[in-house]
Image (tube, rainbow, N blue to C red; front, side):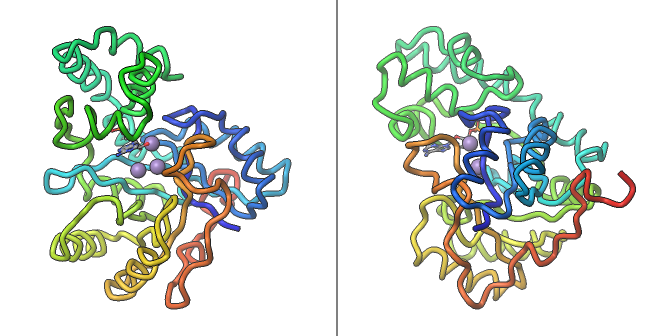
Length: 286
Ligand code: AMP
Ligand code: MN
Ligand code: MN
Ligand code: MN
């Protein structure tokens, strides 16, 4: 019962960090990582709650990366969140979000939808974390779309009318920062990027040569077939395997059940075998 990818309201999830931990525990989880987008602000509260419940907690973060013009997400695991190199990188990645929100709001305005800037900001617990999830929520609340999926297919997704190109961290800087903090890097939900076979090979080889550790072989509600395919790719490129629900809120069909992922295919080398307990509070010097 392992889940190494989920979100709290520190980024674009609905529950507080402690609530995420309590729900994962209630669902039978035995090892959990909270991986908010570009922010480690929920880790201390989550870890404190996990300690109370006797649930093994792993520090995590999901970092936004631009690789060859596309957005890729990289999950950092089992790092020391006090590392300046990591925190500087995360702060830099967060910086662009408000400007991007303004640009998206301007495009929405041209489509006749007003107030997206203030409206989306009001939904984010933290203004520097304003995400497209909050914009989607604003669009749902205003009756402009039926659900989150439609917000992305109609307005916000890549190539859609209100999409805005954005430069996040580079893959090299991201892997280096996670490494500087003593952690491991994992490519999040590789089945969601619609990469060609060649692009996958380029990404996995580059990631591996930069010092990346693994890929998510299971994510959210992906199919068993996806898992088997990515397990084979992990094996081929010498990468370990991770799994995560990518839970954001209850009733969100794209996220899996919080706290529980199906077992990894037999040929996988589990990424948690490489954890060294670097998470703050577990390391010897903290
Ligand atoms: P951002 O980091 O602000 O660009 O927002 C990305 C977040 O939007 C992801 O973490 C997902 O939670 C959500 N998201 C992205 N694409 C989709 C999609 N096609 N359908 C539903 N949610 C999406
Ligand atoms: Mn998200
Ligand atoms: Mn993601
Ligand atoms: Mn995620």
